[in-house]
Length: 87
Image (cartoon, rainbow, N blue to C red; front, side, top):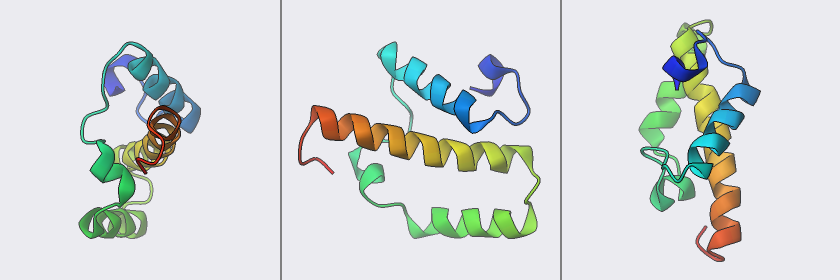
């Protein structure tokens, strides 16, 4: 994604566009299967909290936060519309 967007810190809207484009091309978002959409692991939550506290201006961390928020929300909406009762 970072190569395609050619940004150090893509905006949330750019991440949304990238996710929708990737899905419309029939590709998948790695590490975002049904299990990951149901419940976020505690270790990931702790990592996010740690980086927000100690690395708030880190571009990679900001990308991860945006991806987590955007992908989770987008895929939840898509999966619910395609497979009722999945989530």
